Image (cartoon, rainbow, N blue to C red):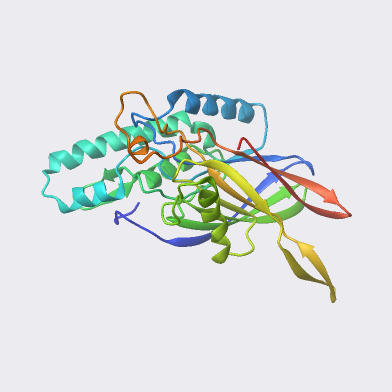
Length: 304
């Protein structure tokens, strides 16, 4: 539980996901910008996503998830600062806190299949604030992670909230063969969105300036749904012999569930003539394969 309203910390996290047989794929979903309880939230699309993922989990598919921020509409950063700096009665704080807690609880109920399968969470710029006593606060992302961990089965993954930016070593243990990839995830508020498709994805590609050799770079915030790839080469030293090798990388804007345009609804998207939002969550399929005698992870990105 946090006693600071705006934590922004950077943590490195390691998690292992196991499958019984080599070659069994792991289906990975980075869920961001749901904006549940917003007027513009696409309830139908998110309900469909939840139903399909729950069916996959129940069918025994190996699915894992992470949260990219803005799970509930909550309050923007400026709204939260206004609330904290204003002279509001405690009843007002308590009423907002109850609403945010109830909304977060409903979100956790609707996505309960993620319990024990959640790798990590990063925070967005929209957060609910939940009050515990006079001076103790918890943000809604922390609360959600806490709820998932309460529900996980023995042996299930224990989720962590990694703050505003995260780097994760994900190890796929596929029938005893351990294959690592590295994920860098940000909400996307601080890297910008871009008014064009190229500007949007280039902002994610530029994360290589911070961490050059990650495998997956994930961002949300601007509700864009697209991906691109790169395979930079590097000099590899294997038992004293140098050779050129390539490193597959994927850069993904992970969409969301907040519609950009609705008839007769006032909206900043329409005012600024932004592109319509990309509705949905990409599926990242991580499949262990053998290529030229070497075992590795093959990566496919679907739904973009």
